Length: 309
Picture (tube, rainbow, N blue to C red):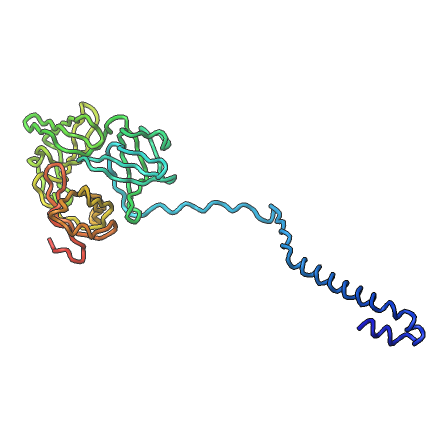
């Protein structure tokens, strides 16, 4: 078009002279247009230049806040560390009666050894510890862990080995110590029952009975108050959430909301095949007998279908 307008504007005599240049002009115009298109396509095909962001405009984001500590009533359990997994932040605790309990911990867990702050690296398998636990969903979480180099003074929980009523001497297998503990039981010692063992007396201090004792230090320990937790042959009905379930080994743990305590129960899967359908977190009713060392289930059912005691 530009060439046509140029030809129209020039006089005829001037037009004839450069007529031989017309092919060259057409070639140049075509070449220029092709070059322009090629440059445009090349520009479109090139990746966009990276955008440089100043570090001052993109500060490092702070770490998220830790989740809140679980709420609810805490329960203290004691025993011996069987396994300590510092990768999964988990302790397998061998508690009274030979049961194993998985307890989770994290940076929120306060750890002590003989009353002094310590770190998880200071705990080892075989250590005796007392753990303040709380239920976090279906997980047992450690609010605090207390490492003990000896059986604690003041209170203990365990199983009666022998009671000499005439001498007022009680031999107790403490849940935090492998060495039996001897307690004096004078006539004025208060004895009460707890939960489903409410009707209790000094006659219940038979071998195999589970107790909790408050005592005065000195003189080998003198019991001030003894709580009867369970006596051999007692029947119990627990209602609550399954915190732990191992169908193959026949063990489960239930948190009973009535006293906010954890109860470890054994069962025979061949007699209770319905346990194969249960899952951790299910609400169940468990009938069990205490045989002197273990709670043995005679019936386990989902709470919705549980019979009344």
